[in-house]
Image (cartoon, rainbow over all chains, first blue to last red; front, side, top):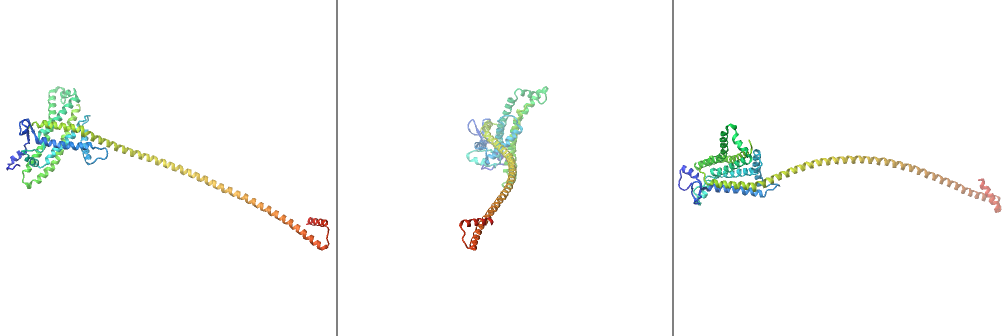
Length: 262
Length: 156
């Protein structure tokens, strides 16, 4: 909250605004498409760098002998991801497993920002002249769509590379047979385009709703906040992990579907 | 929710992160893991092999002990026989030697007896002559004396 007293609606509204950078004038503010959500950008970058530096640190010092605590921890995650990939993906691409790992860790870290107190980061950056700050990048559709569109591009790429001409036949004849080919094409197009949409909107919806509930809890009197806040935060630990896992798992499944000929 | 240029920024960030993970994070860690798995598998296999070898060695050791035992029994048997034989031989030797010594003693004794007899005979002859000398109280010439002595000795 800023210094002047805000109404409930204003408080909520305030928390739903991004810290934006106008890319045309390079100043704070927004200008249609050429706007950068600085908060999303900065937090995702920080969490991304955090993951990558730790992973790289472990990778450089990785030993086949007795692993240390950190290496052990990373190996557990890595084995978990690797197993998930092996269970549903049977192709030979060396990209899928690292992609799944990156998605899982990055999404998890960005979701984790949801557990910071809702006013913590906005208050912290307010003295720097930043009027708004949304601390959860995955509650920004730009973030989730950026990932799902990349994955969609990969789905299309693998569909063409692996299936070749077979893809055309698949488009025309599945699932209703060759005589209903217009229906098949429509069906298939919808099926394919729903993938990135559902992937992005599921994560965004979950995180946005979670954040909103935290904001609403923050509106309660101070003595009543701990109970719903605690319950929701504990429940949210589950949600952020599950959402990261689902995002990873669906990516693997979609990509393995792109590999499998029907 | 408005889509704006953030999408592009995040897209690039995401691609860079995935690329970095694929290039610099995933391979070293997975290779370390698989190398360790191989090490463990090798270790287990080596343990199994060592166990088998130990079993073999135990069998071999038992065989050796059994052979050694039978050899020892054989040698002891031989030694027994030999010792019995030696004792028998020693007995035989002792018997022969004893007999020989006994015979020797007998011979010596016989010789002593005959010598003593001879001596006694001579002395008796001397005494007899001396006695005879005194009896006849006269001196016989040497030749007669010698003849008398010889006769006397022969009569003894």
